[in-house]
Image (cartoon, rainbow, N blue to C red; front, side, top):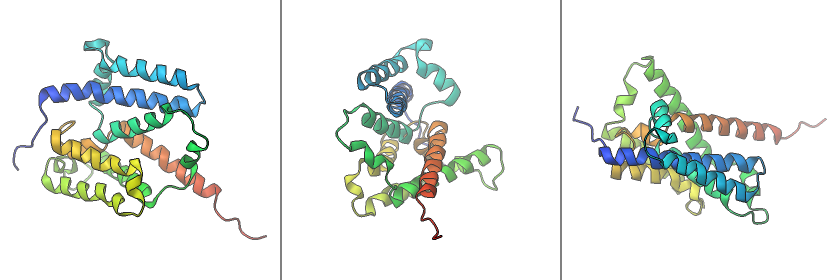
Length: 218
């Protein structure tokens, strides 16, 4: 096997802080939005959390989060950025009602793929798979497969007008250009925080589907 292409050390250090700044700012804003916290306070908290991650040395949240979880995935950072952007925008009428509607098929597909991939990587960590899955993330075939999976949502009619449809292609493109965060494509599209969030989204969608299922006739 050829030597894997790794990101530049300086790029990795910059991403560690910038990536966690985006995750903390976007994640905190999204969580506060669910609690009906005023917009001004949401923005203030997001700024503080982002700046905390950008601080140098062990004063930075990114330093301690990096020790525990390494750097966030490109996909995770983009997802939390999108959620934070939505949470920090002023409410416009029924703008947020769409969030409660049924998800697109490609959205369900990507969530299921992320959950399954995460479980597979977890089993690989404990050497419970017949092949070393994580090591395949340094090879071109794995990148090719993920490029195809990332582009599939754009084939559904109307998807190109949804910003969320571009998150996976953007994450893969960032990996191709800068090899972030580790040079392994699996780390670019999934991380523990994002994996946990995908489970929560899947459970919520399943519950919504169960609540809206047709009731049997009496």
